[in-house]
Amino acid sequence: GLGPLITLPGNKKVARDEWGYGLAGAIVNSSGKWFYGLLLTQSWRSIDPNNLPPDPTDNTNPLGIAPFLNYQLGDGWYVGNGDMVIQYDWNSNEVYVPIGVRLGKVVPREKGRAWNIYAEYQTSLIYDDWPGSAVDSSIRLNFTLTLPVGM
Image 1 (cartoon, rainbow, N blue to C red):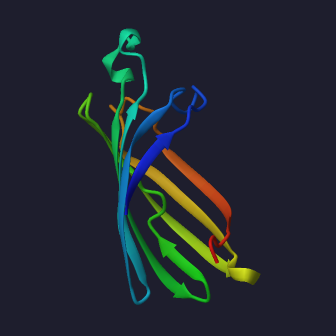
Image 2: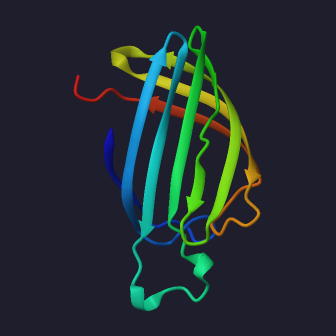
């Protein structure tokens, strides 16, 4: 699929405090117990050209490359590579490469709803010269309720 990408302003300490816009495209496939695919995103900052930041490295416009791979272990359990989004910035020619592992369980509920519960560890392989925000290592625990739409 292909569609629009809109980024909302965030907290200046951890994200851009500006609107962003762009495109996103994804391809997905499943084969037996494997679920895999690739998500590509390109966003541009929405800033006034007359008010550009003095440091050109502050003006990041990243290309996001997010491969994903999950293996179903059975009984709702799965293991995968987590939220791995490789980023390339066209302005600085720098790259950010994280890698991670996720262990999760999908718990079906009534009326097509399901809980996706997972723990994930992620570390950054390449990030020293990345002009945007980057995390060296992180641990994440997540609970997501999935609601069916249009049924």
